[in-house]
Image (tube, rainbow, N blue to C red; front, side):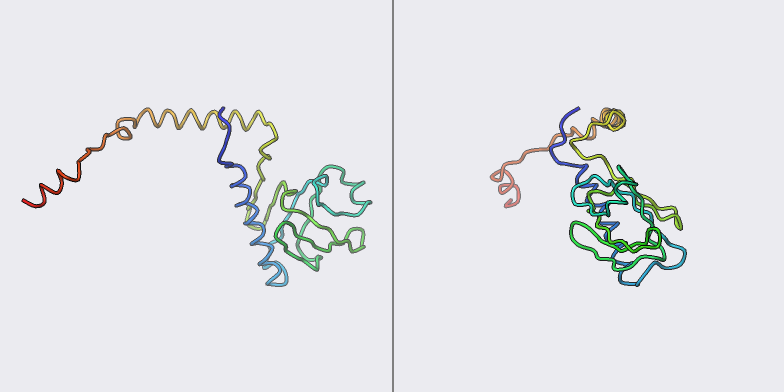
Length: 167
């Protein structure tokens, strides 16, 4: 497969992160979630910039899911992370989650979720297979419509055009 020099995964990830940021901003603006909405945010606890207590890190060595519903406070949204105070075993704890650490986002009230894509440097056989299938489908579609795509343009010189219009 050809190397992605445009960076489609990064573009899609940024767009999905913006969805989460917009939701967090609405939650902050409205001082909570409306109706039955509650959101689950799963993140990698090993990602650079994640700040959680030592006891949480010992309990969630790889990944952790937090729920924003009723018992959270001090939600702050920054350009590269958000922070919030949650209660664990009846103790408030401030956590900081960089957007790049997020792996999943889900609001079960409306069955809306996001699975964040792999980082470009990670290798994934499943991604390669699905990308190959998508490329094959595009190739087949192109082959079917090749005639439409390869129509030639008629080149007219400006002098010829001027002669015709001045008659």
